[in-house]
Length: 129
Image (cartoon, rainbow, N blue to C red):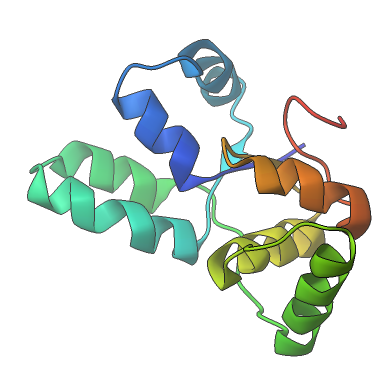
C-alpha cells in the first residue's frame, strides 16, 4: 500500500498537532509517497524556514508520477457536485486522480477527500481502508 500524504497532514505534523503518531507509523513502515503538486505546496514554505534537510527528504521520497487527465478531472468535479460535495479545488481533484491512477490511499485532513472517495472510489487513510 502506498499512502499519498496531502500537504494538510504535513503542515499539521510540522505544527506538532494531532496526527503525528499515524504519520510516524506510515513513515516507519515506508508507506508514504508524494507527488509534484504536494511538493509545490510544501517546498516554498520549507525554503523560507530554511529547512534544507526536510527539503532533501521530500525530494528523495517516492513520487507518484502525475499524468493529469483533464477530462477525468472534469468528470470527477461533476460527480462530486452531483454527490453534494461542493467547492473542491482543482489541486485536490488532481491529487485524487493521481491516487486513483496509482492505487494509492490518500491521507488528508481535508474532509472533502472522504466525501469524494464515496463517489470516486478511492481509499482514504483512516476511512474506507
